[in-house]
Structures are given as C-alpha cells and as structure tokens.
Image (tube, rainbow, N blue to C red; front, side, top):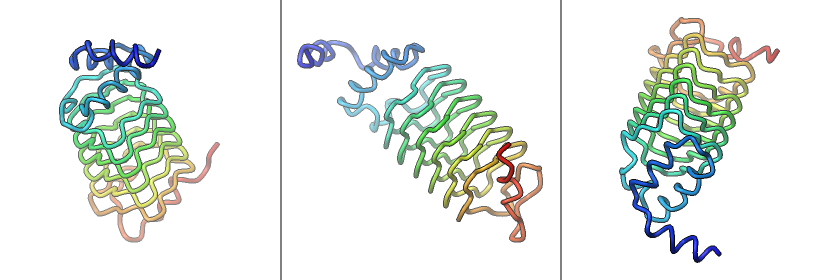
Length: 193
C-alpha cells in the first residue's frame, strides 16, 4: 500500500502539494509535507514568502526548513517541530504555537504579535528584533535565546525559563520598560495562577 501511495504521489505537482499545506485540513497538509520533504522542497527556498495564513500544520515536521518571510498568521502550528528552521521575517501573528519546538530556529525580525507560545521550546533560538507584543509565553523555554531588540510589551510569561537569555538595551520588557543589566527577569516569570 505504501508503494502505491508513493507511486501516486509522484504524479501530483509540487504546487498542488503546497496548496494542500494551505487547505486547513491537517491530514492533507501532513501528507503534502511528506512528499515535499521527499522532493527536497522544504530546504530549497520554494516555501519562502509563502502565504500559509490559517493553515493547520499541527504536529508537522519542518526541521531545517527555509520559511523566510512566510506568512503563518492565525495558523495552527501546535506541536510542530521547527528545529533549526530559517524563519527570518516570518509572520506568526495570532498563531498557535502551543508546545511547538523552535529550538535553534532563526526568527530574526519575526512577527509573533499575539501568538500563543505556551510550553513552546525556544532554547537557543535567535529572536533578535522580533515583535512578541501581547504574546503568551506561559512556561515557554527561552534558555539561552537571543532576545536582543525583541519587543515583549504586554507579553505574559509566567513560568517561562529565561536562564541565559541574551538581552540588550533595545529589548523591551513586558511592562514596556527597556532591559538593563540590573533587570530582574524573574519578576515576569513568577505566578503561574
């Protein structure tokens, strides 16, 4: 059965598979990702600046994918695996990234405004210059993440791990104040209630 499915999959164009990613149908999107990965499409830049608004890519594997400048606004990316993905300039406004793995992802200048990153793993991610205003970072792992120039205004961060996070004077904290060497980040990560 697997051979037949693979044989049939070879007759569907790359463009058709990309359209399936946008369909809002999780099963169709995950199947399309399988074939796109098999063709090497996830890494070759084909998905750059793609419009995936509202897509249902929950539990997808997009490790090392080149998604630069893609639009995932209001997409369901819960549990998605983005390890070491190039997500520079990506739009994730109001996206659900609940328990997503973005370890070592490159999110430079990304727009994560009002996104849900509850229990997401952003360890060693490069978020420099990202807009994370009004995002939910509850129990989010930001261990050694690069937060230089990140705007966290209004972000909710109870239980977040900020151990070793890299900040600078351009980093805007959840209360709207700039980061300084005397800033105690734990005041934003307490109180899980």
